[in-house]
Image 1 (cartoon, rainbow, N blue to C red):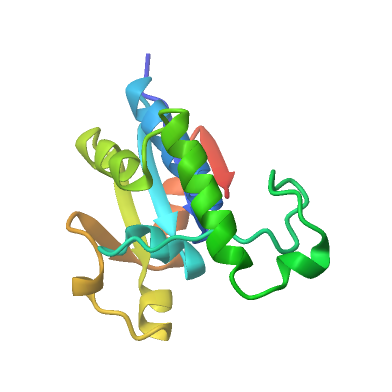
Image 2: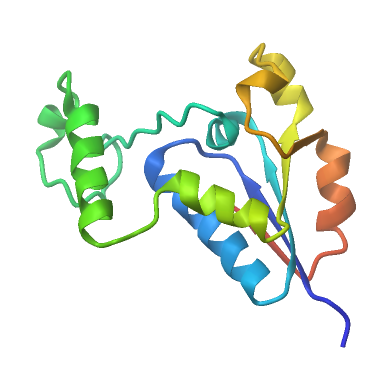
Length: 153
């Protein structure tokens, strides 16, 4: 039976949006899938050495923080929401993003940073963790076009 493959494009760089691509990639790799992830625009924050990810309750109706919209816009609401989310992550024993990212690398998941976006934001390879590859949209299409599963997150 031929090896199955999965291509994931990660476009979001907040704490709550960091989990789906890494959980799906690490699970796919554990199931024997050839996994490749393409990080573009704000998704590149997930590859940075210094993970300073936050979550915003503003405009997120699924956020368990139940505050009126006016309070969500108040200074400090983002820090409160992030602290609450991190506390819940720890209390439930959920792995942190850095752990999931390391797990993906150990499992052979290829992490590809969008070179155009890296250039756009004036970032350098030294801003990112070791093991990151660089490529453009054609790099993504090269592996996504042949994958069995393709996810946009």
